[in-house]
Image (cartoon, rainbow, N blue to C red; front, side, top):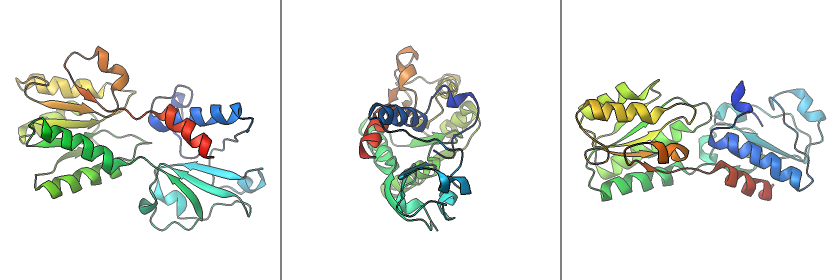
Length: 239
């Protein structure tokens, strides 16, 4: 496993790929297969390890732009990147496991349109292991296809001021790609309330990461949650 963030998040998994990592390891051990975790694949010591399948979890295309030092016969499986996103990759990849951002964004945006939204928006906070660029591209492609203005705020450090800007520009619905480690949804709801509006009566909100907290959030937000544990089990079965 490569490109995982340092610090306590390794010990307390919060986001999709961290859930998946723990689930993959657990399922492999249950099957009496011993996974080896390495801090980086771009080191000569990888060639000395008894690896038959290398699972590289990363959202950085640059990880594949340089040869990975593995022995002949070792297969590479990439998790996190779609094949078309790995520009300039020079390694022979046997399989790709990625989040289908276009399908997720289309489902969310189509749902908002079905609920009467005429100016949906997409808001994302910085996250080390989320394919934000893929979600942003999917959202912009959808807006272009529908002939709607692209209300997009990506990489914002906090959500309240970003939500205020989106509302000032006419957004009537917001899709939030936030971080489960931080109360990003709270900033969105505060901004809506400060504007004299309410959720969901005036502004519809879809959160892509807040499902575990949804029962405890006051207004009725819609949630779409990607289950990393289940994805990890499936990945372990494929491996």
